Length: 128
Length: 128
DNA sequence: CAAATTGTACTATTGTATTAGTACAAATGA
DNA sequence: TCATTTGTACTAATACAATAGTACAATTTG
Image 1 (cartoon, each protein chain N blue to C red):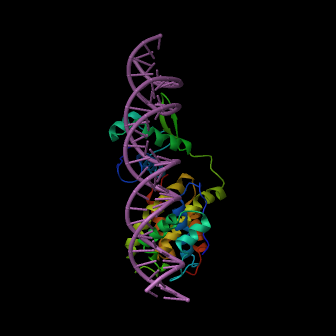
Image 2: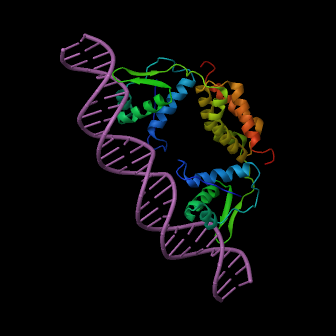
Image 3: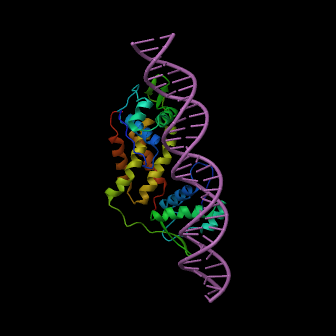
């Protein structure tokens, strides 16, 4: 798992780390029980404070995406128990609406928008 | 144009205003050359500082969504000249990718995700 | 022209986010 | 067991975001 960050990019470093881990999992590059680099090692590579890495790991743990154990390390979790579909939709709805608003603002047609999302979804990797 | 805000909701007030104006335009409730409430009037209704409203208006103006004129007022702009489709797609890509990542995280299937976006898009109003 | 109405610029204040420093606790492993 | 490695808690410094106060400039309107 290779992680890169760009300070002074606007988005906080810990969010950049979170995002990259999420993408890697969605793309199948990280699988269940894979380990993530120790906070000190990753922090040294990125030349940042270990607590900044820890914060990213803690947020991901809060989201149920991985588990941390002091002295042990940091491991990718298995898939969540699976919510009701209605609940999943409810959670994703705001982001879908925002995407739609932006698309209409740009006068991007409905079909073009759908194709964009299809491509984005597929690019993450067919294998989960 | 009725605008409501909730302070202490996490999202800044000026962003709440921006969002509501964008949605109203996308839904067709606001059309070209419609006027928005004066900053002082809206600020009085919302019990906030006029500068907070002004900031929202300025951001929307920076995005080309409306135009402001001192002494005059605030007007909704006509549609932008229309970018190249490739440019539109480039701008929307990050949001589409993020939505895809979240969907995979929740194990929401491809077809369900597509339908969610279709519904969101249509709900904004067929008439632009 | 003059008064009223509009958006703007500048400044200040308050709170919070981001990151880092240091010390601590839990687990591992020779 | 004991040293090492791991994540964590607590604190603090710094910067920036968000909002407000005040005074100003441009336009409208009678």
